[in-house]
Image (cartoon, rainbow, N blue to C red; front, side, top):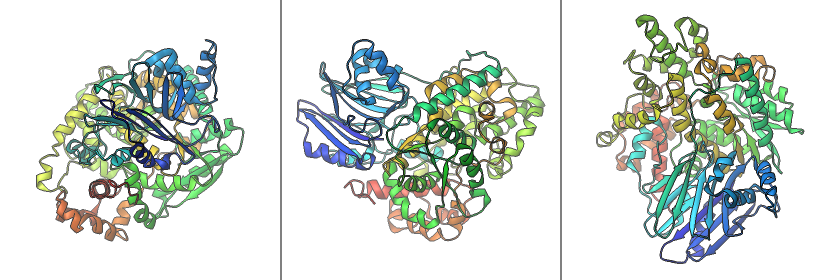
Length: 634
């Protein structure tokens, strides 16, 4: 985990060292172990380093021949690439993956990204032609932003770096607010800041700083065309080998490595494999709430830790913690966050940072292997529709009514979602029905002021959703849902993963998002991956004999639930009222104050509307009202 800034001016205007240094300093939390800066006329690159590999030789910006690189993340197959390059006579002077990145660019040009297995966001400044090449990893594990005003172009690891440039004026982006009101994340390249764009996952950018010409290339995306026809037993063996190798690669580190452990299949598998392959002591960190068994999965985490031979440290976030850290979370996130789980993750990361520098986690398993309960709800409706009308929208009965029955207990605790989903539109088109399942507003934007609602048309959000949902090679409902969540929902969760770890000087790694795993699973027939709507059926088979059977058989997994609705009805009600009914909030005019006051006392169990409103208001306070603009950290 590192932070970097690259600034390029037009017309040979020299980069101001004080401006570049200030922009980099806004990212100091990402790299507490070292810093570097390089300015050559109108080009400037700065880096804040978290030293994980080659502690002595990996300083940046790193110049290799005619190119200089700043890089955040890890190229996990760098040793293999290094051996290949050494076979071509290339001599290395460090043991870092950043030098491998630079020399790979010199050897293979912009196609170098096709060879990288890792999590990365980097910029290469090429003096041979004065151009800039930047790229972001396939899933968006590492962040990469761009801002230009016609006179200068800046790229950075976090948006807050741009706030330090005297020419930047923070203004909200209406399209982002519209998306967030529905999805609680932003689709496409927009951000909450007008003029600031995301380089999208799996994309590279070729930039001519002098003319401002940009060429964006999608170098990778998941391909769901069914190619692999191996027998199930063989597929399970291939997957198990890929999982082991992914964890092996991501254990590479010159500093202590730990794991975040929820007690679900994904994090348990990663933790246990890390314990088996790591060859040393492993510490696992688990968060749990004291508000009851629905918020405490620590018993399963203990079982997984025992199987891994790991020490388990249990952290109990509280309502008092929530009040304390929410302003800090909003500052570190740069944009409103997707779901209250960010709070619990932040507190766990804070504790983990006291003893490790690298954390392995299970992020991505739900998207890759089909682990969301909403998939079961969607297929229950499809199975009913097929049974009643003897129809099949997919061309192959992946899930029948009889096959889905044993897996319906997974819906036991999802009463509110079921009531909302079946309230209208029964047996509608697949895209409309899945859109309803992921609509975090639950079709009710009444908490926004009337003039705001006019600009929050859900049909516009549906149009953006529609183009992603109907990927040309996703014929089955299952693959359409998975593709959308990989392309749109997962980057928002990885945004959380990156920021809560970076806030505490940690590097977070997610082995289940090894590109080889995702490519292999995507190529398999849906009937192997979602038989009878059993969630993660293929992963469970691969994990059998590794993960305790009690964890594999769980029917009560709920992610990382936060008792926010309980707190809002009790001790935190005053906090929500102080924020959402304050004079500043009323004058802002975004919300219908009467509806907001009503919602504070009656938020549904595990509802997300109150969370979304709180994040929007705190974002405006932090970044529009002034403290973020001045660089002040809450």
